[in-house]
Length: 243
Image 1 (tube, rainbow, N blue to C red):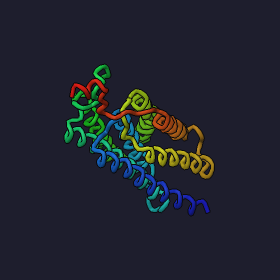
Image 2 (image 1 turned 90 degrees about the horizontal axis):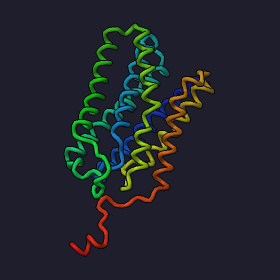
Image 3 (image 1 turned 120 degrees about the vertical axis):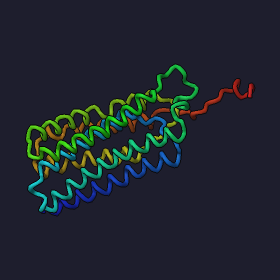
Image 4 (image 1 turned 180 degrees about the vertical axis):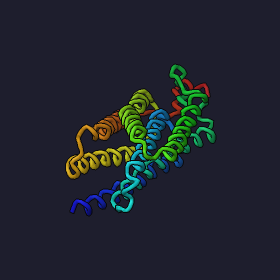
Protein backbone atom coordinates (compact mmCIF):
# COMPACT_ATOMS: atom_id res chain seq x y z
CA UNK A 1 0.00 0.00 0.00
CA UNK A 2 2.81 2.39 0.94
CA UNK A 3 4.59 1.59 -2.31
CA UNK A 4 1.53 2.48 -4.39
CA UNK A 5 0.97 5.65 -2.37
CA UNK A 6 4.63 6.60 -2.79
CA UNK A 7 4.42 6.20 -6.58
CA UNK A 8 1.18 8.20 -6.70
CA UNK A 9 2.63 11.05 -4.63
CA UNK A 10 5.83 10.94 -6.70
CA UNK A 11 3.89 11.48 -9.93
CA UNK A 12 1.81 14.24 -8.32
CA UNK A 13 4.97 16.07 -7.19
CA UNK A 14 6.58 15.71 -10.64
CA UNK A 15 3.52 16.98 -12.52
CA UNK A 16 2.97 19.74 -9.95
CA UNK A 17 6.59 20.89 -10.27
CA UNK A 18 6.46 21.04 -14.08
CA UNK A 19 3.11 22.82 -14.09
CA UNK A 20 3.95 25.35 -11.36
CA UNK A 21 7.26 26.48 -12.85
CA UNK A 22 5.73 26.38 -16.31
CA UNK A 23 3.13 28.92 -15.15
CA UNK A 24 5.88 31.18 -13.76
CA UNK A 25 7.98 30.97 -16.92
CA UNK A 26 4.92 31.65 -19.07
CA UNK A 27 4.05 34.73 -17.01
CA UNK A 28 7.59 36.11 -17.34
CA UNK A 29 7.63 35.55 -21.11
CA UNK A 30 4.12 36.92 -21.71
CA UNK A 31 4.70 40.03 -19.58
CA UNK A 32 8.27 40.37 -20.82
CA UNK A 33 9.21 41.35 -17.26
CA UNK A 34 10.90 40.00 -14.12
CA UNK A 35 9.75 42.85 -11.91
CA UNK A 36 9.41 41.83 -8.27
CA UNK A 37 11.33 38.55 -8.71
CA UNK A 38 14.47 38.29 -6.60
CA UNK A 39 17.51 36.70 -8.24
CA UNK A 40 19.17 35.90 -4.90
CA UNK A 41 16.24 33.66 -3.99
CA UNK A 42 16.43 31.97 -7.39
CA UNK A 43 20.15 31.29 -7.00
CA UNK A 44 19.68 29.92 -3.47
CA UNK A 45 16.95 27.65 -4.80
CA UNK A 46 19.23 26.52 -7.63
CA UNK A 47 22.10 25.70 -5.27
CA UNK A 48 19.84 23.96 -2.76
CA UNK A 49 18.06 21.83 -5.37
CA UNK A 50 21.35 20.95 -7.13
CA UNK A 51 23.05 19.68 -3.97
CA UNK A 52 19.94 17.82 -2.82
CA UNK A 53 19.77 16.11 -6.21
CA UNK A 54 23.44 15.09 -6.18
CA UNK A 55 23.31 13.88 -2.56
CA UNK A 56 20.16 11.84 -3.18
CA UNK A 57 21.60 10.24 -6.32
CA UNK A 58 24.80 9.23 -4.53
CA UNK A 59 22.87 7.99 -1.50
CA UNK A 60 20.73 5.71 -3.69
CA UNK A 61 23.27 4.49 -6.24
CA UNK A 62 22.78 0.87 -5.16
CA UNK A 63 18.98 1.10 -5.04
CA UNK A 64 18.10 2.30 -8.54
CA UNK A 65 16.47 -1.01 -9.43
CA UNK A 66 13.62 0.16 -7.18
CA UNK A 67 11.06 2.09 -9.23
CA UNK A 68 10.01 4.23 -6.25
CA UNK A 69 13.61 5.36 -5.70
CA UNK A 70 13.93 6.21 -9.40
CA UNK A 71 10.74 8.24 -9.20
CA UNK A 72 11.88 10.18 -6.11
CA UNK A 73 15.26 10.99 -7.68
CA UNK A 74 13.59 11.96 -10.96
CA UNK A 75 11.46 14.45 -9.08
CA UNK A 76 14.59 16.04 -7.58
CA UNK A 77 16.22 16.18 -11.02
CA UNK A 78 13.18 17.98 -12.45
CA UNK A 79 13.17 20.48 -9.57
CA UNK A 80 16.86 21.19 -10.16
CA UNK A 81 16.31 21.59 -13.91
CA UNK A 82 13.46 24.06 -13.28
CA UNK A 83 15.62 26.23 -11.01
CA UNK A 84 18.50 26.22 -13.50
CA UNK A 85 16.10 27.18 -16.29
CA UNK A 86 14.73 29.92 -14.00
CA UNK A 87 18.19 31.54 -13.88
CA UNK A 88 18.45 31.34 -17.67
CA UNK A 89 15.07 33.01 -18.19
CA UNK A 90 15.98 35.75 -15.70
CA UNK A 91 19.22 36.55 -17.53
CA UNK A 92 17.53 36.32 -20.94
CA UNK A 93 14.89 38.82 -19.85
CA UNK A 94 17.56 41.24 -18.63
CA UNK A 95 19.58 41.01 -21.82
CA UNK A 96 16.56 41.34 -24.07
CA UNK A 97 14.92 44.31 -22.39
CA UNK A 98 17.91 46.02 -20.76
CA UNK A 99 15.96 45.56 -17.56
CA UNK A 100 18.72 47.05 -15.43
CA UNK A 101 17.97 50.51 -16.85
CA UNK A 102 14.23 50.08 -16.25
CA UNK A 103 14.42 48.47 -12.81
CA UNK A 104 12.39 50.46 -10.26
CA UNK A 105 11.62 53.18 -12.78
CA UNK A 106 10.57 56.43 -11.09
CA UNK A 107 12.07 55.16 -7.80
CA UNK A 108 15.65 56.49 -7.85
CA UNK A 109 16.11 56.14 -4.09
CA UNK A 110 15.85 52.35 -4.20
CA UNK A 111 19.02 50.37 -4.72
CA UNK A 112 18.93 48.40 -7.92
CA UNK A 113 21.16 45.36 -8.60
CA UNK A 114 24.26 45.98 -10.68
CA UNK A 115 25.33 44.00 -13.73
CA UNK A 116 28.25 42.52 -11.77
CA UNK A 117 25.95 41.37 -8.98
CA UNK A 118 23.40 39.80 -11.32
CA UNK A 119 25.86 38.01 -13.59
CA UNK A 120 28.02 37.08 -10.59
CA UNK A 121 25.09 35.28 -8.96
CA UNK A 122 24.11 33.66 -12.24
CA UNK A 123 27.56 32.21 -12.92
CA UNK A 124 28.01 31.24 -9.25
CA UNK A 125 24.90 29.04 -9.35
CA UNK A 126 26.03 27.28 -12.52
CA UNK A 127 29.65 26.91 -11.36
CA UNK A 128 28.50 25.29 -8.10
CA UNK A 129 26.20 23.00 -10.09
CA UNK A 130 29.08 21.90 -12.35
CA UNK A 131 31.77 21.60 -9.65
CA UNK A 132 29.67 19.52 -7.26
CA UNK A 133 28.59 17.35 -10.21
CA UNK A 134 32.23 16.65 -11.09
CA UNK A 135 33.17 15.92 -7.47
CA UNK A 136 30.13 13.61 -7.15
CA UNK A 137 31.44 11.66 -10.13
CA UNK A 138 34.96 11.46 -8.65
CA UNK A 139 34.05 10.44 -5.07
CA UNK A 140 30.55 8.92 -5.25
CA UNK A 141 31.03 6.83 -2.10
CA UNK A 142 32.11 9.62 0.26
CA UNK A 143 29.59 9.86 3.10
CA UNK A 144 31.27 13.05 4.33
CA UNK A 145 30.77 14.71 0.94
CA UNK A 146 27.12 13.61 0.83
CA UNK A 147 26.49 14.98 4.33
CA UNK A 148 28.17 18.28 3.39
CA UNK A 149 25.86 18.61 0.39
CA UNK A 150 22.78 17.89 2.51
CA UNK A 151 23.92 20.45 5.10
CA UNK A 152 24.59 23.21 2.54
CA UNK A 153 21.33 22.40 0.77
CA UNK A 154 19.33 22.67 4.01
CA UNK A 155 21.07 25.95 4.88
CA UNK A 156 20.18 27.59 1.56
CA UNK A 157 16.69 26.09 1.65
CA UNK A 158 16.03 27.79 5.00
CA UNK A 159 17.27 31.18 3.76
CA UNK A 160 16.01 30.97 0.21
CA UNK A 161 12.75 32.90 0.46
CA UNK A 162 13.91 35.70 2.78
CA UNK A 163 15.32 37.91 -0.05
CA UNK A 164 12.08 37.36 -2.00
CA UNK A 165 10.00 38.44 1.00
CA UNK A 166 12.01 41.66 1.22
CA UNK A 167 11.69 42.17 -2.54
CA UNK A 168 7.93 41.59 -2.51
CA UNK A 169 7.43 43.91 0.47
CA UNK A 170 9.57 46.80 -0.80
CA UNK A 171 8.63 46.70 -4.50
CA UNK A 172 5.66 48.97 -5.11
CA UNK A 173 5.25 48.11 -8.79
CA UNK A 174 3.27 45.18 -10.16
CA UNK A 175 5.09 41.90 -9.48
CA UNK A 176 5.60 39.20 -12.11
CA UNK A 177 5.85 36.58 -9.38
CA UNK A 178 3.16 33.96 -9.98
CA UNK A 179 0.73 33.31 -7.14
CA UNK A 180 -0.22 30.02 -8.79
CA UNK A 181 3.41 28.87 -8.71
CA UNK A 182 3.80 29.87 -5.06
CA UNK A 183 0.54 28.15 -4.12
CA UNK A 184 1.42 24.88 -5.86
CA UNK A 185 4.94 24.90 -4.40
CA UNK A 186 3.49 25.46 -0.92
CA UNK A 187 1.11 22.53 -1.37
CA UNK A 188 4.04 20.43 -2.60
CA UNK A 189 6.05 21.24 0.54
CA UNK A 190 3.10 20.37 2.78
CA UNK A 191 2.45 17.13 0.87
CA UNK A 192 6.13 16.16 1.19
CA UNK A 193 6.11 16.79 4.94
CA UNK A 194 2.93 14.73 5.43
CA UNK A 195 4.19 11.87 3.29
CA UNK A 196 7.74 11.69 4.64
CA UNK A 197 6.96 12.25 8.33
CA UNK A 198 3.64 10.44 8.73
CA UNK A 199 3.74 7.69 6.10
CA UNK A 200 7.48 7.03 5.80
CA UNK A 201 8.25 7.83 9.43
CA UNK A 202 11.10 10.26 8.71
CA UNK A 203 12.32 12.44 11.57
CA UNK A 204 10.51 15.78 11.73
CA UNK A 205 13.88 17.58 11.92
CA UNK A 206 14.58 16.53 8.33
CA UNK A 207 11.32 18.17 7.31
CA UNK A 208 12.16 21.60 8.78
CA UNK A 209 13.38 23.07 5.43
CA UNK A 210 10.06 22.09 3.80
CA UNK A 211 8.03 23.49 6.70
CA UNK A 212 9.94 26.78 6.69
CA UNK A 213 9.69 27.02 2.90
CA UNK A 214 5.91 26.52 3.03
CA UNK A 215 5.48 29.18 5.74
CA UNK A 216 7.63 31.75 3.92
CA UNK A 217 5.88 31.18 0.60
CA UNK A 218 2.52 31.65 2.30
CA UNK A 219 3.87 34.93 3.69
CA UNK A 220 4.90 36.05 0.19
CA UNK A 221 1.43 35.19 -1.14
CA UNK A 222 -0.12 37.22 1.69
CA UNK A 223 2.15 40.21 0.92
CA UNK A 224 1.36 40.12 -2.80
CA UNK A 225 -2.39 39.78 -2.20
CA UNK A 226 -2.61 42.54 0.41
CA UNK A 227 -0.34 45.11 -1.20
CA UNK A 228 -1.74 47.72 -3.53
CA UNK A 229 0.63 47.71 -6.50
CA UNK A 230 1.01 50.54 -8.97
CA UNK A 231 2.12 50.37 -12.60
CA UNK A 232 5.82 50.54 -13.40
CA UNK A 233 5.33 53.75 -15.37
CA UNK A 234 3.34 55.76 -12.85
CA UNK A 235 2.95 59.27 -14.23
CA UNK A 236 1.46 61.88 -11.92
CA UNK A 237 -1.01 64.47 -13.15
CA UNK A 238 1.73 67.15 -13.23
CA UNK A 239 3.88 64.93 -15.39
CA UNK A 240 0.98 64.35 -17.76
CA UNK A 241 0.44 68.12 -18.04
CA UNK A 242 4.11 68.61 -18.88
CA UNK A 243 3.83 65.89 -21.53
